[in-house]
Length: 258
Image 1 (cartoon, rainbow, N blue to C red):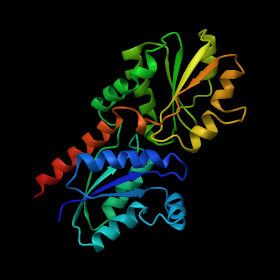
Image 2 (image 1 turned 90 degrees about the vertical axis):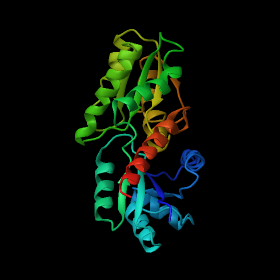
Image 3 (image 1 turned 180 degrees about the vertical axis):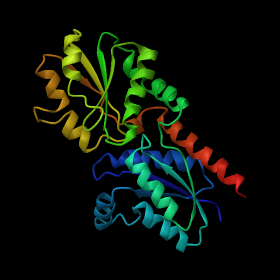
């Protein structure tokens, strides 16, 4: 029985779920001999989608139990979390508690190579108009991995220059000062790139929302024109290469156990 691949994402109930479908197609094409399953680490989202008829969506612990019942002994688990934060910690616990031998790929932005790759992926959106400020906006976290956002900014600035800024929509690192900082630096235009796998609720509410506190409106109040990249990372050319490289590394490790 060929070892299956379980793709684990936080989940979404929005149209952005099409990003997962795109990632699944690429994964199936590149790993034709492996069955691909999905799990959403948000129990709320997983159960809501099950109620809407998407029975194939499971929480990771539920998915592992089902695969064990079907006779599988081992599984490749590829998290689609960008950083090794709280969600990945919870997934790690689910894997440890499972009766399956779970071989995990690394979160998507983990190694120096991943940081270099994400710089290449974002390059077309950064260098086309250098006079603009470029703001990369991610989720943010209280987890110790919050320092990864500073690491990302360092890599991007080394590659492209000081017009790159990295911030978050909530938690740490606190980014409330960035609109002022970009304005005080004299920029009249800013391009916002959402650093999310999918452009779901945080993109719609916190970045382009109608609230005066949305990032789009923060800049408009400062007379800074905003250009928005509307796609999440998962749909950008080259990003699935990071995902499949991590899966292949996990498959290679699984072969060592045979």
